[in-house]
Length: 120
Image 1 (tube, rainbow, N blue to C red):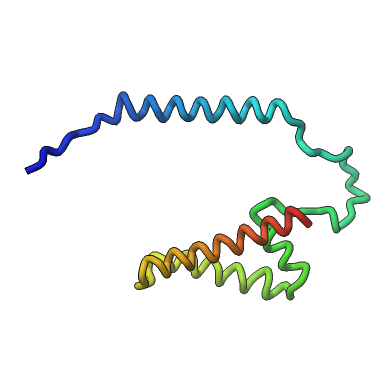
Image 2 (cartoon, rainbow, N blue to C red):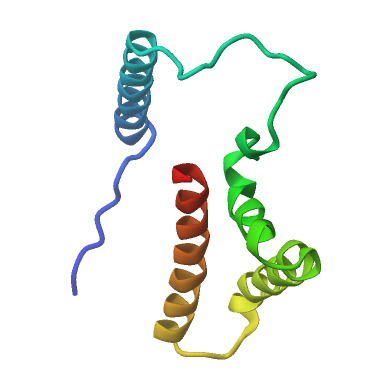
């Protein structure tokens, strides 16, 4: 019979996580203070060209689909089907490999559309 050893998490693990959090914050602060944000000139509300307006990063994929597909398909049907599939993954009776493949495919497509909108 093997003896189960207990791992103390309160002083040891919490201390390691706190050090990692502070180190990560310090790296982010140093990185963000050393580089300037890629800002343009002063805002001009009367002369903003439509081509240069970009959505927040989470909606860039939908914005790129709206440029090429019909508004009903790109703005309503595809996002609803995608969200329905992602939310249905835990309730579907499939093998883990198919669930992982479906999740990876949806995540990959969202990442690809976001990257496409960022580059273009």
